[in-house]
Amino acid sequence: MDTTAWQLWLIAAIVLGALEIKLSGFVTLWLAVGALMASLMAGAGLGLNSQLFAFTLVSGALFGASRTIFKNVFMRNAVHLKTGVEAMLGQEAVVTEALADGQGGTVRINGELWMARSLSGPLPEGERVTVEQIEGLKLWVRRPSASNEVALQQPARRKKKENEGWD
Image (cartoon, rainbow, N blue to C red; front, side, top):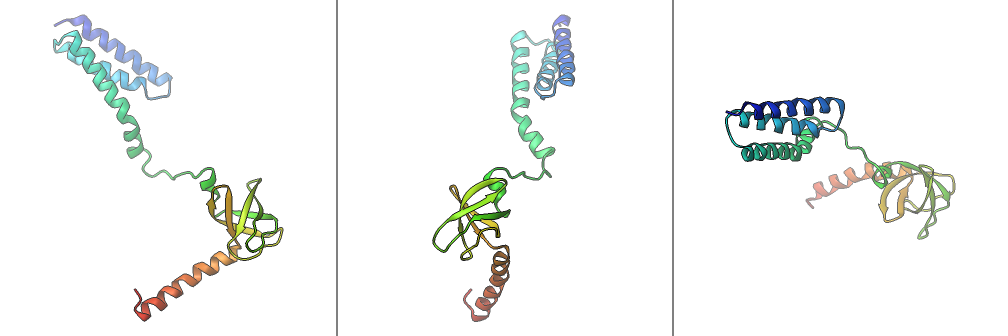
């Protein structure tokens, strides 16, 4: 048994572990674990090729699986943060250029001007609206009260259908 090889791998594992404490990337941690495995392989009397193979295999597998491990273990209860266009759905905007039937206008949302179309009839300048859907660079908006009315009317229609046997 070659005592210097396992000691060198153990020193490498300790140095890489100390680097992981100093750095924050979870990269050198996996290299440290791979060096520890190579140290065990050297302690068992296996050759340099086996030690390098174990180091590479363990380090690579842990590095590749780390995203999945962290996502499934540490991030399972995390809330998805909506950004960009996805974040605008359901937000309020202010009409800056009147929206007429069949014609678009302009709304201001998050300090930006967007082309918009109305889903609830003509809307005068200055009215607050809710973004219902996004199609390319155009927002489809409606009065907040109109979206509530539609939500309240839909269950009534379903009950009527159920009573008449349409379902």
